Structure formats: structure tokens, C-alpha cells
Length: 183
Image (tube, rainbow, N blue to C red; front, side, top):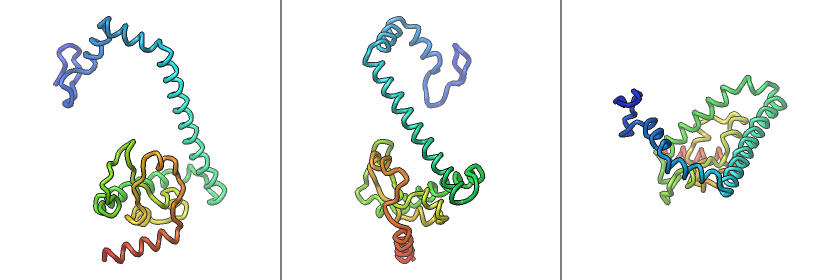
């Protein structure tokens, strides 16, 4: 469908042209004045300031993680991170895809309480982290094994970051036990 006013294509999900409705809303003086008044209040300014600080802190931690990974590869592996960056992204993507398929297949083992998954609900967590699996050359099918997966609250999972809850030995023994059960 195409909008009669502006000639832009209307997305199937929406029943009206979003650009025209936003312009019409903003051209309404009551809506515009109310919106501008809200933006000039002290509460709005402090909320935005806090939000920007949190965003900056998140960006800084992302930078530190990447910087730490780069240092690790340069010191331990003897090569630059840029040389293996594509391999890391591919490894991570393969693990995520295998984890999702294993979650669907073994949901009763990983999530027996049928906890709700979502951004601020529960996450599927890897007990032995993906980063450590990559550093130690552990195959993706071992990292994404149901024995290595658990449900964690989103806040706990974010706090956990790249730490491991189990050792490498526990990871492989759990993998062996799971394989023996399914065969």
C-alpha cells in the first residue's frame, strides 16, 4: 500500500502511514506544547542525564571486554585479535544457534519450571562461558550441550558476564553423561 498524502510505502503491520501521522501529531499545537513542556522539566533532564551515564558506562565495559580479549590474544596466542575476529564471531554465532536448538529440544531439562524468557525476565545461560570455550578450543556442540545450560534471572546473567560456574573437567563429564543418556 502507498500513502495518498506523502507517496511513501505503508508497512503491512501498520494501518496508516507512520511519517504522516507523526507529522500530523507534531503539528497539533496541544501535543507539541505538552511534549516540549515535559522535556523542559528538571525530572526529565535528570532522567536523561542518568540514562546517558548508564549508556556511557555500558559502552566503557564493552570497550574493556574487547580490549581484554585483544590483549589476551596478543599475549597468549601470539597473534593479533583482528586476525581471528571473524573466527570468534562465527564461533559465537554457531554456539548461539546450537544453544537455541538444544533449548527447544531439551526444554524440560534446561527449564523445568517453564520460566518466562525475555529481556528482563530469564536468560538461557552457559555455565562454562562461550568466551572461555573459544579460548580453550572447545567445540561449539560441547558448549551448547544441555548440561552446560541453565536458566538465570537477567540481572544475575548480566552480572555474571564471562565468568564460568563450572570447570572444564565438569563440562566434559556432564557432556559425556548427557551423550550416554541420549544414546
